[in-house]
Image 1 (cartoon, rainbow, N blue to C red):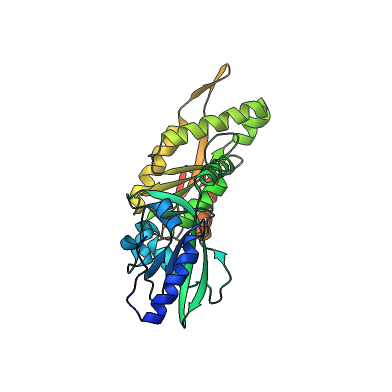
Image 2: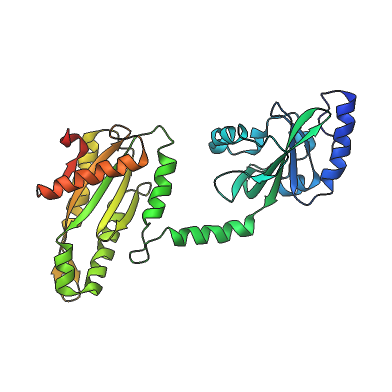
Length: 304
């Protein structure tokens, strides 16, 4: 293990050598960062976990261990680092990603605390391998965000997706869909047939969009579609009309041929709303206008 970064006075350097012996005895990977955001020490467990040693990291910014897409969020977390030495987990998620020396990303949990060394405040980040937990968490999250009846994402997944999406500058479209006459259909043929209709609709919706779009069952016979790379009304109208046409095609169910209709409301981010809740409400409001007018599709822009 190379000695810690020594671009400072002898007293501080001696303290860091003492600190290094303590850090190397710990099982978690430890990164010590100074007040300027530079790494001053790493321990042996960090090298085992990520492949980096002190010669790779000391004197560099902590950003070198953070995947590029997470660095802006890290800056916000860093501004809220604890002023006292009480350790706490960082990040909104229980499992984060750290960059290994070979460029791969490793799942970790990160606990941060602070320590005074000769009047200098050091932040200590303890990284623990979370590979097994990450697999288990991924399965649990996927299960919790999947609609049990149709197998497509549910409202929980939509909320998470939109929270992440509205933090980005790129525009997108959101469609709120409500099946027409579904209650009468459900009442006439029973809930088992009604459930099968919902499964068919979910499959058709998933087949009518691109892989980067998101189809969600909102509730009952309501669905939401998030359309990427849609930045103007004409594009949103075209996509909504294509989806409505795709859904309207007849299909076989049990011993009969049937079809379903749909009312759709559309909204554009950020033109119609810049907040997640407001965007959903805008598309929902447009959908109810489409339903009241007996139309297949109404955009928010048509209500102004």
